[in-house]
Image (tube, rainbow, N blue to C red; front, side, top):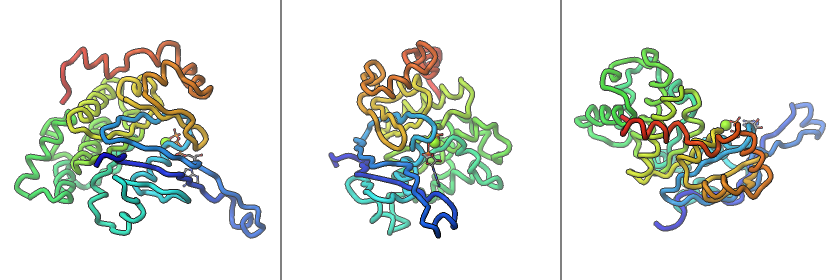
Length: 282
Ligand SMILES: Nc1ncnc2c1ncn2[C@@H]1O[C@H](COP(=O)(O)OP(=O)(O)OP(=O)(O)O)[C@@H](O)[C@H]1O
Ligand SMILES: [Mg+2]
């Protein structure tokens, strides 16, 4: 299909504020976390979403994967309204859009080995039992982990290793869209570089559409082709990543760039540095 793979049309998400008493007295108000957002993501786009804390980035992500529902507006996956797709809970759309969080690794079942966890995810995708083990090993290799991790329990891995298992599990679903909400901020710099290189390679080789939420403009600059700048629940600026970072039009984007220690928005991110130091990851 040639239309956008993901679209938001006038999407607003508000949360009721105040307690029961406020509501009884008619004093309750709504806090608007996302305010009339319209955007289109084309297949294969690698989109960086930046903005201050509380600007609505994670809210946008959880709406897009169907974890929360919009107050008003519409979300379309490949032209189909998400609300309609969600009525069919087991629908294949769930596979097609996956999310990784800052602490995806901590969401792993503590009693299941890594191999078991990946095999179960592959089973959900309908991968036959006979090939699940091989595919699990391939997924571990893809995220730069050895097969010796397979029999371990989550607590027997480091935080960075767990995070990469979280990523492997999302990739096990062969998603069309991956939403990564600060996926590397819990990792040390060299692991950040590995995961970013991996994401970069996946977007190129698998044509994965990536929404990458980050506070690190240098990483966004290296990885992303487009950038969306958010503030107070609104998109204040968007466009080709390098253009926006070189010539920000909105004062808030200018502020965001100028608040990064001098030269960082233009410096090479750890990913680029590591890419030239080591030829491949995983
Ligand atoms: N369930 C909720 N109930 C009430 N308010 C919420 C809820 N979820 C989010 N918010 C509010 O919505 C706003 C946007 O939150 P969101 O998590 O999207 O921000 P963010 O841009 O991801 O920030 P950060 O960079 O800190 O992760 C915040 O002010 C937050 O407090
Ligand atoms: Mg967030």
